[in-house]
Amino acid sequence: MKELLQNFQYIQRYSKDNLESLKIILQFLLVHQNISFKDKLLSVKERQIPKSFYRYLQSLNIEPILIDEKLNWKKILRSLGDLRVSLENIEKFIQAIALQKTILKFYDYVTPIEINTLILELLEIKKGESIYNPCCGMGSWIFSLKEWGKDCIIYGEDINEELIGIAKILASLAGVRESHFQVVDVLDISFSKDSKTFDKIFCHPPLTRQNLPNFKEDLRFIFLDNYSKIAPEIPFLAHSLAHFKTKAIFIIRSVLLYKDLGKKFCKYLISSRLLECVMELPKNIFPHQMGEFCLLVLSKENKKVLFMDFKSFCLKEGKYNRIINKEEILDLYFSKQNGTYSQLVSYELLNESYLKPSFYMQDTLMDNRVKLKEYLKACFRGQRIDTKDNKDLIECYDMGIKDFEDYGFTNTFGEYSLKTSSKKIQDIRLCPYDILLAIRGVNPKVAIIGEEIKDKIVIANAGILVLRLRDYAIAKALYLYFISKEGRKSLSEIYQDNNERIGEREIRNFCIPNNFLKDFQEKFENLCKESAFIKMHQQNIQSLLGFKE
Image (tube, rainbow, N blue to C red):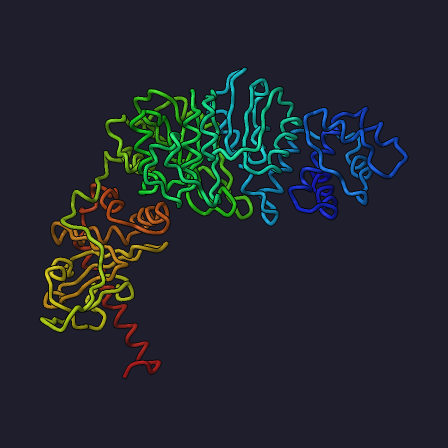
């Protein structure tokens, strides 16, 4: 691979862009595979590259790029020497320049090797089947096909002509016996006339597509209804389903499984019984994509859905994570059993607006855990209250995250202001023993309101989630759990799973230990005593330093 990287850097000096440089070095690799032809080329005395070089590429159904006359093409062929450049090395070279050298901006066109191999094994490809990728990029996933997979018929499409040219070369290098790559905008309405279906479909849709067309007249997208342009991958998935025959696997953002932007798509998958498995992938495995991703495995006439959570199956390499334990993932998938990382759920128990694996994985722990909603009296978000007129004004205190005490009761609040008296204010005013959570953040911020609030009207601001428990004892015990090592870790995972935020739905379904009420009273009293000591020492230090008189 070292020689490939050096030659690529050399070719960059004589190319218009990085994609052209890549295609040129791949052209040399095709020629290098034919040793006798390569030797014949090297025997030519002229400095200019022979026309036979281009004719040879055309005989392989490759449209060649003309090479700059200043480039020393013999130097490149000689540097490869008699070395047999393996497919594995070529694949690693593609991965290196795409996913490690992100400055080249190839990362949107290539999927990591580990994901490619996992998907192609999950697809259970059989000899002679058709495989379709509607946004194939460079087509580097072809290298992950098993030997018998090269006897399949491969179809790849992309809107980028340069990428299709590279995909054709990679298919030839990989020894694929029959492949069909074409430059196509699959979202073009005229393309919907093609009713061809494919045995297996693999789709890693782009997230950068701009100026998406109007789908109202396109029958492929009829179930999208009020399609949102903040979910550009959904039309690609809908297009793929229009050509779906046996099995398909999509790489999607996890937010499509529990946010409104993917609600209609999920509803369609459930109503048509297409959803077979949802796999939650580790974070940070796709360069410049910090969100969470899942694999959707689709097949026909399913009775249950297998939810799998593999967020911990990763190894950090450089700036990004790499998925590991592929064999364990495959074993769990094909065995279709409940376990630490998997949960089989019947269609009747699915929540069509929440298909994230971690939500269903909680059920494997329900023997000794309970959902928080069982103890909640109310749960609501703080609000901003404006003064509309000068009639019936009352004093209100604003409660912000900055007012949260680190430990024990919070009894101090922001400055008061006059607000118009209303039923709304009475409904959302804070009460003693309310628990407050910061809605956004990485590290959870928690507070419990003390009894000094009784005679005050205090309103939490819009960045706070208010939990009102059924009684004071539960509130104290829950607060202790939230700030404990175990509880803080569990809360942090909820924030991380939801783009660093928490909402009513997430907190209602948050699982807590059944025994969280055990021995809480003494612990809570001791915590309040220690908190009082800390405050006293802080005040003494401030006085010592002249901040307080």
